[in-house]
Image (cartoon, rainbow, N blue to C red; front, top):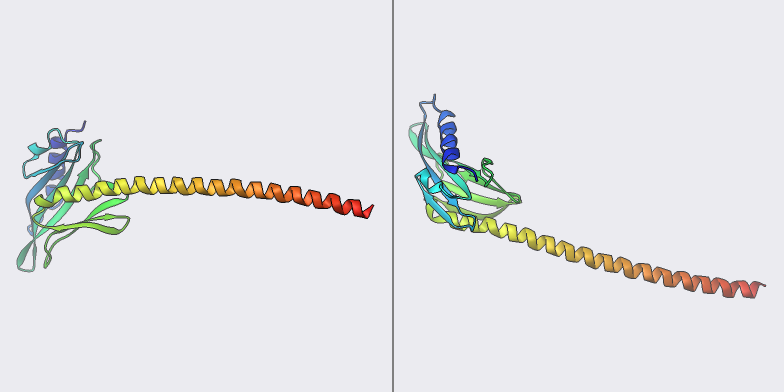
Length: 186
């Protein structure tokens, strides 16, 4: 299993380095969201919470100056159970979008195939279980869609089989008509 504490610390370092030379941006903190294999979500501002996690979400926060005011900006990273950092892409056609910055309240929105399925504003700690549950519903939705497609395919196969039987009946009828017509022609 991936070492999420180490991976998250590397991610925080990369994030800080991305604006280290800027006097207009300051790293504030990271919210560490641990997700167990059973789908239970725990949040903390300490990476130790990630010990034993199955996968995790990191929500980095920085302050950035816009003219004369400082505003919070966020970046979301998802690290799956293999330790792959997907930067906001969760899987199953799901991704997370952040709205933040000057004049905006920090908002996370979870999308499934471009459909907004869950949205929440800061503070995020109390909303992460709901976000994860909404994502898990998309997994079930995908399974339900697959089952519906299988049922539709089976129904169509039955229709094709019925049509083949009807075609064979018509062929036999046509053969019988041909025989009758050929008897009259003789």
